[in-house]
Image 1 (tube, rainbow, N blue to C red):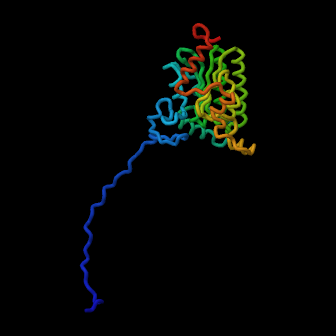
Image 2: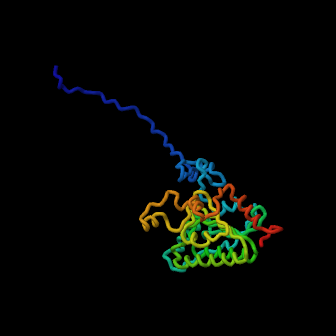
Image 3: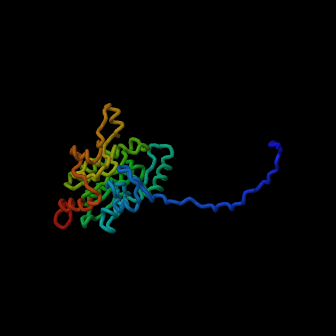
Length: 290
């Protein structure tokens, strides 16, 4: 037998298989899940609730000015001031107008602070709320001017003022103009203080730089939210300057409370009640302030 004799094989084509129907990958809407930076848990957004707290470790996520107004003010009592004020370009910084426009589109704000008058459990007060969603709450000419005007109106109306701070510091695009706001806001608060009126500073995450070095630290009463970063220069800058390793809890609310820089740490859940008590203790008959 010739094993090498060529053989003819029948070629059988494989059966035709209908192409699989194209299926779209499941779509997960943006913002449905959030990761906690502290406990590293993945959280369904609805679980953080109106106070924006991690359900596992109670970390305080950042709030917008609008959300904080909803938590602090009596319903329909907030009257906004200077709502249309927007920044110019005093230092001719390249394309600064585009940076501002983009920040306005993303945040829905004209600038990094919302000011106005409201009631907290019936007590009338002036309120200023910085919003980190607008250029990280950086302080430029508009932020300084709005806060100064709010303090001056509080003085004229003989009302207390509460300022919620959240800022990465002075706005570099406005150079020396932004640094001037430190003195301007501080001078207005000094005049308010000289009239014997109450100023409550509430520091939220983060409160740093020129804001910390001016009006944030001048409160008659200084409160802070848990776990907030509070300080002037950043950790890496300080460590590089002194060539030493800083404690892990350095520049937290808890560290500042231990060292006497803040008077109390108040959970967001208890903030309105705490402010209401302070306003009541400093008011005179009829809910007005001396």
